Length: 195
Image (tube, rainbow, N blue to C red):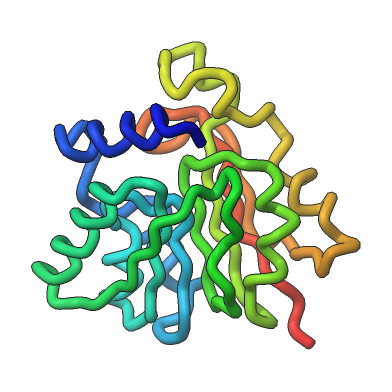
């Protein structure tokens, strides 16, 4: 990610130009699947809306993002909510994911296909990857994110299946279409096999 991109995200967070401080409705709907304790990683977690929800459930959350401003907002929101999260500034276009193992790894609206090869390595045995990304069909109704940040329709399962030789993941739940929040999105929960 370029310095210009980091500055763009810092400015966006500074201006509070984001959708919501509430956790993803889809994430909260997964409550029965997700653990209530253990380590969790929120990839490109920004201002921490999903990190805080996980911390309220009892998980020990690491929120990683490129924006210092976003992470400062996440830290302040966590304190206001009476929970603790760890924040890590990293440029995931070049920096590695924080070392695991994590029982849950979230990645919402951040696309870097190379991370799919890294996810199994940071997940604990039996750990869950919770991933959501708009597809290119989203452009039919929305100008952002632009095409370079969108996946093809039907692509998400192949990204997970394609890593089978690297300690691959088993798909637990998958949906794609015009989902809540008005986006055409692919959503997946995948589990690292136990043992």
